[in-house]
Image (cartoon, rainbow, N blue to C red; front, side, top):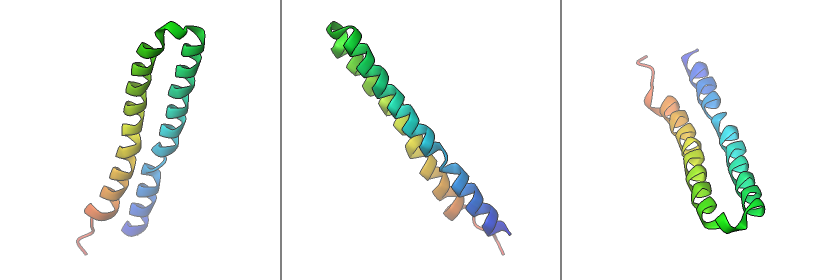
Length: 78
């Protein structure tokens, strides 16, 4: 029963990957819209877009890390 709960927990931890994909799309979409509205601020907008992309992708790295922790580190003592 514990192994099944671990599998469900690891699967639930990877749901954050979908959120990270949506967040990355939103960041890049907003960047494109801001550059088309005001091309003179393209360089400053690009810096903000890279920062938003990096912070969003950090979540995408934490989700598999948690899944691996649940799967391999938390072992039963039976």
